[in-house]
Image (tube, rainbow, N blue to C red; front, top):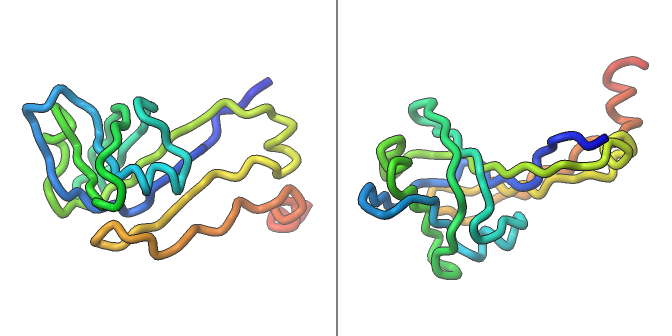
Length: 135
């Protein structure tokens, strides 16, 4: 059996541009994509921390080092320049890998200029979870 798990996350990314007339997608600096393992055309879930909007779209690469985060098409109407968003992708993972604590999402927290400020700690191991639950 497989379980849908978080694969990649850019936390608190800041929208730098928006283009309602572009055909769709979410432009992301390719350097940030590589840092968390996002792929060109990969489906993502986006959550806007400013207004609570959530939407799905796909990723396209913006220039390396540009720090651009650009919602396009209909997604541009759900964001504004300066909004902080969370960009997440998911993968189907074998349950045994999850149970054994071997699946680790790649997560990066960004500042207001989309510079990496913190790689969020790895997911807890099975033993750590059991100790938290008092098992």
